[in-house]
Length: 257
Image 1 (cartoon, rainbow, N blue to C red):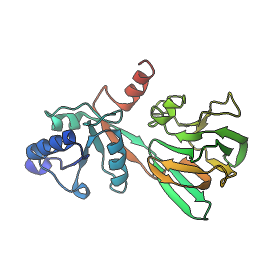
Image 2: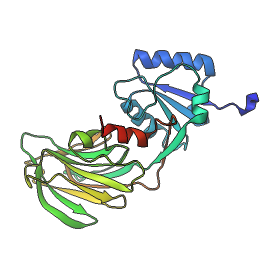
Image 3: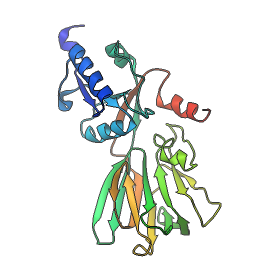
């Protein structure tokens, strides 16, 4: 391979000692460049840092290869200090569309955020939240009494969604998961699987008495009165995975663990 044919890597790492140490070793061996000049971004950390990196690289159209140097590594590849160039050459790419959240608050302000895993609504006070649930502008639940509710992508279906007893979605499925957390009324309602094209709107009943927050991949908005969520088809995140250890295989494994 000619020197001019070599890939340019940008190594990003979380603040943990493990991640920073690995970054220093990779940079020493393979060099480093700014993310704006990179052919591949290598993210060293856990899933939280991967989400942060994907949001940072949103406008660059550069694939991101994660290496697990954190606690949770569902979106990451296994750590090895050797043969990174060969692993990257053999890696398989998965394209993911995030969710777009548009939230309106009690003070009239509007907030837009993107979420790769899920958008969730959570009660802020001691009383349960009361929500109206619309799908494509059609009222589906006139009153959902719960601790919260979320909409998850296939990539995020094993995260908060799964902990709330929501379904695990195949990565190539064109669907979203709508899941309630600790639903009190309707007591037996566990959520729904919706087309990827669906637009979900939550309206908060009694927002002053029963305050609710909205969260998009840890980007939080307080005291919301309504939240619209839909897939952002105009935005694509590119993730790289080692062969036979891709996101689709991990989603299947998670259901048998």
